[in-house]
Amino acid sequence: MPLFDFQLRPLDKVAPWGGPERPSLHWFGLTDGWYSIDVGESRLLEYSDGIVRRWAEEYPKTAGELPWTGYSVVRLYEDVLELLPTTLVEVPDELHQRVAGVEAQREWSARVKKILEGEDDADPERWGQYRSVYEWFGFRQLDTLYLIHGPKIWIWRNRDRIFILWDSEGGVTERDAWWTGGSGLFSLSVEDYLSEVERFHASLMKAMAERVGEVLEKDLFPEVNMDRLALVEEQTWREGSLSRALLSDPQMTDWTAAILANRTPGHP
Image (cartoon, rainbow, N blue to C red; front, side, top):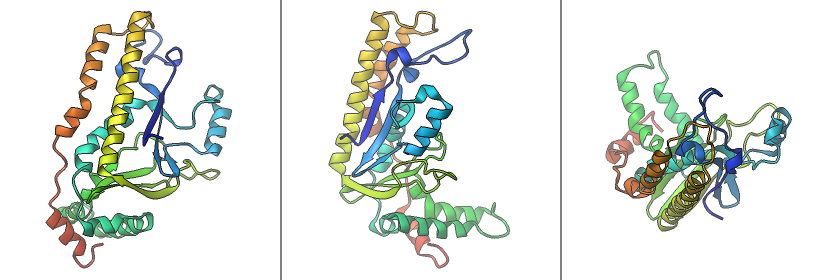
């Protein structure tokens, strides 16, 4: 089972963007589908049975669809690649130990927030302290803000392991948990993680090359505003995305300052 799993929506079910007077579609929109992150016995970005049932009642057209996050698959792909250079930078043991577990991370984050407590939360010195203590971890958080009650997911390296920590505590409604994954910590070797990213890249590029070819060959979406040449050019550009990500600069952290800030009395 791949770490980053996805399925594209059938082409005849892909909805153009924009209003009916001038609908449009491009490479990003053609990646419409579903995706998840599979970590051990848990699956992240998968909706709970209760949420799936409620949506099927409110939006009958969604009945029978995969319970994974439904969106343009390239969104997850872009976020994973954007994080990759920073993910591969090794986090020192002392900081890693503060967040290597759901309860440990929650307690640490709660103490971090106390730095901002006081009469003037806009105080530059206080914000500077906050950045020194917390920013290194924020750099390693996968973006899920575009999702309703999106789970918090962090990915980082310590020594020769990649750690994935997730917390879906905020995704609980008055009736149902939003996600199936709950909370937890998973790790794999750096080599295996890179292999999974490469597999995600190769699988998506292959699927989209076939999709772009089919759109052009069969002249699909004839009434939709679509730049066919741009589709081909973007496909070529996207195929180089992983290579560019691996050559990109990571978010830099002053590890000495971060460690000392975390040791300061009154800090985590």
